[in-house]
Amino acid sequence: MAFNIVTKNNIRDRFVSHPRPALWKDTDSKDWNNWIWQQQKRIKSMDVLEKVIHVTDEERQAFAASHEQFNMGITPYYASLIDPNDPNCPIRLQSVPKMGELTILDTEMEDPLAEESNMPVPGITHRYPDRVLFYTTHNCPVYCRHCTRKRKVSDPSSSAANQQLEDGLAYIERTKQIRDVVISGGDALSNSDERLEYILSRLRAMDHIEVFRIATRNLVTLPQRVTDNFAKMLTKYHPVFIHTHFNHPKECTQEAFDACAKLADAGCVINNQMVLLKGVNDDPKIVMELNHKLLMMRVRPYYIFQCDMSQGISHFRTPIEVGLNIIEHLRGWTSGMAVPHFVVDCPGGGGKIPLLPEYVVKREGKKWTFRNYQKKEFVYNEP
Ligand SMILES: *Cc1c(COP(=O)(O)O)cnc(C)c1O
Ligand code: SF4
Image (tube, rainbow, N blue to C red; front, side, top):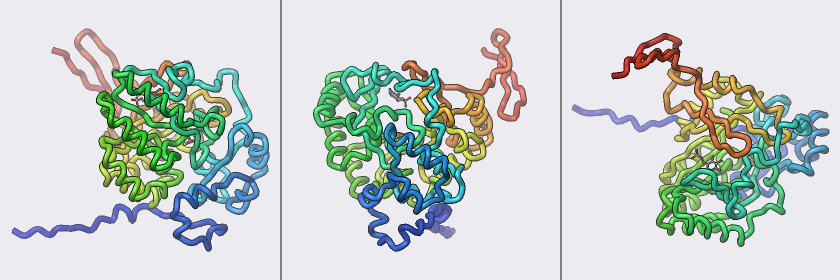
């Protein structure tokens, strides 16, 4: 019997590459596809932003009042995803200042997750028994307006200098219960390939270190950063996990697809940590579409974070019910692979608390009554 082997794979064709804004119409594709060019041409002022989108009075006012506290920075690539005419475009809400940032609530904190107080040495947060967060840079290609680390990100005085890097590595080396290191920032891919390789090689040489994760939003904001050389370099240090931060299906472009493909082909496992944001992704349909696209890009949805208590982001925060409702509309209705954990990172350093809709209707001794995703009830008798 002869098989007809079909090799046509049109998955990539289902992703779009957005047209370039007029400002960069004549830019050489070599430049546009070069991450250093993208980095150098980041939009940092209203004058340039106005050439790309129709800026509203509110945005102009918000920029003037906020940029000294928290810079604006948008790569031309990420700007090309913004709808120039829609002030509520989900890409725009994440990257252009709004007046809501100027409201600071009493319940908000500069360091809501108490990352600074769980620091055995500067640059390391050690909260859980066997893993640490390791800050290696303060920079990011795009400054997300909802960033939880606003206090440090974009502030050059908080940069992880080489001495701090060495002190962090020394702490990890002597603390034998650590087996998992989250290499973070800022954005870990704001480090040069050389600096990252130095960190990876030092960690891989430690016998107690099993895995590390590279925490980066570059796949979303600057996918050109994932070069063939970078992906090839990672293959020497496996197992390498990539933790990224897609928030909206519009961010799942052909460019992002290609960046994920390079990393997945190089053997990396990619996980997504979405932040629940009002007006961006507080809708089960949007999250379902996002998670389906992520799976096609070989990215596994890992967490949905409740927006935390950082200062000046109350306009993004949703009630806890919104997150529970999203899980309710995913579990059972679609692939379990597309259902992440919904977590609240507790103010004060309590760590991540997972929340689920209530599936236990009642428990009578050994008799449990559950309800399924369709709200039908079923009894399970424990032996
Ligand atoms: C989120 C976090 C981690 C990693 O947690 P996982 O649940 O393993 O992904 C580690 N350390 C700190 C301080 C964190 O906030
Ligand atoms: S990439 Fe991460 S650290 Fe950088 S601004 Fe965005 S949320 Fe903050």
